[in-house]
Each structure stands twice: as structure tokens, then as C-alpha cells.
Length: 254
Ligand SMILES: Nc1ncnc2c1ncn2[C@@H]1O[C@H](COP(=O)(O)OP(=O)(O)OP(=O)(O)O)[C@@H](O)[C@H]1O
Ligand SMILES: [Mg+2]
Image 1 (cartoon, protein in one colour):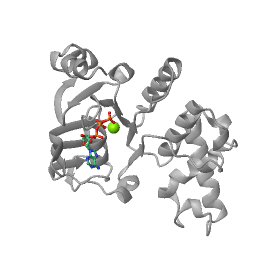
Image 2: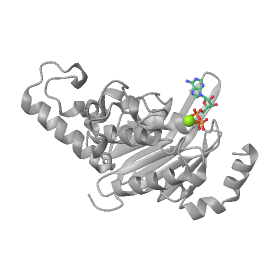
Image 3: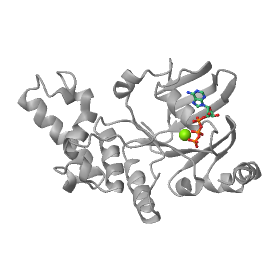
Image 4: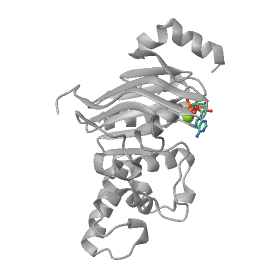
């Protein structure tokens, strides 16, 4: 796929929750090998857009295309097959499993015998292949040395890396991250941003983030939502200087 070809595209997205219009005519394109950020104040609709793309919310209207083909909005159970992986707000590792086992759970797509977590009916070569994939994913986030640790013993920033490795193990074309820097200090944020930039050699990354400073340096392009509408989009510099963006953020004190 050539640089800048459109991988994922959403247009005219409308979502209402009862009388509340959470998204109004929202659009977003994600090209190959880029990092795109969706930012905006509290309640702007960021998570709703994220959820629409990963099948947790069904839009009232709007079109979706993936790999250049128009299609229905994805269902959660087809994401891995399509090549879309996500981490959710909060981390959600299984505390009593090892790091490697937690990452292997992300590899369901490759299991010939169904649910990995059940551990039943897998043959030795499947198991070895899965372990290898999980290890490769961990190394990609510089966490290979943590493989045998119990998840409950990890420091918080390490749990975030492992959650990303778990998403990487299905070898996605699109990785979706909801607040990857949430709860991290400035040093860890820098390191997380470097890690995300490295991933673009083989995938595109879509980040949803409340604080715009955190993602400015890592994103190639940004979309700014406010009250469910795209109020600005473009490079970090374009967006930072846009009076509409400044007003939206000043208005909320975020
Ligand atoms: N399941 C739901 N039912 C009803 N209203 C909802 C639901 N999910 C979100 N909303 C409302 O839709 C609007 C957009 O919410 P959303 O969570 O997408 O915002 P956000 O930009 O992710 O905010 P935050 O920065 O706080 O995470 C808000 O007004 C929210 O209260
Ligand atoms: Mg949110």
C-alpha cells in the first residue's frame, strides 16, 4: 500500500443518545502509516466516535469505508479479522496471569481451536506459535523482559505497554488507543509517544485524548471535536493556532 492511501474513512457520522446529539456530521480519515489524534474537551464525543469505529456504538447515519471499500460499521467480533485492534480507557489485564499469557489472549485471531484463554484443545505447535507472536509483540513495546511477571506485580506504566502489546499481537493495520498517556508522568509520556511513532512502520494509529498537549508531538494530524462536531483538523501547528480550538479549550479550562 502506498504512503498516504486512505485506510479507514468515516463520513457524516451522527449518533444520538436519546435527545442528546453526541456526534453531528463527524468525519475522519486515517491514512496508512500515520498517527491521527482525536482531541477535544470533556463530553466532546471522542469516545463515542472511537466506539462507533470499534462496534460498541451503532451510528444513526454515516458511512464507513475500510481499505478503500464502503462497508457496514464494524461489529466488535469482526475487528480482529478486519485488522483493527484497540485498547480501552482503563487497562484491563488479568492480574493473576503472566504478562505473556495476557498478551497471548490478544491472539485469538491466530488460534485454530477457538478461545485462547480457555487453554483447551490447543496443540503444541499452535501454543508455540502463539507464544512466539506474543513475545514479538512484547519486544515491540520493549517489554520482553516482563514476559514471566504476574500482571498484578507490574508498575502502572508497564501495564500500559503490555495492554498495547496485547493489541499488537493480532498484527493490526489500525491500532486504536483511548488515552494511552492517561495517568502517566511526563517522562513516561515521552517514552510512550516514541513507542507509538515506532509502530507506524507497519500500521496506522488512532488516538483519542482529552489533553491536547499530550498528543500534539506524536500525531501527524489531529481532529478536534467540540459538542459533537469537528471544529478543526490538520497538523498540530494548524490546530494549535486555530481560534476555534483555543476558544473551545479555554471555555472548559481543560
Ligand atoms: N451510553 C451513553 N448514553 C447516554 N449518553 C452518552 C453515552 N455515552 C456518551 N454519552 C454522552 O455523549 C456525549 C459525548 O460523550 P463522549 O464520552 O463521547 O465524550 P468524550 O469526548 O469521550 O469525553 P471525555 O473527554 O470525558 O472522555 C456526552 O454528553 C456524554 O454524556
Ligand atoms: Mg472519552
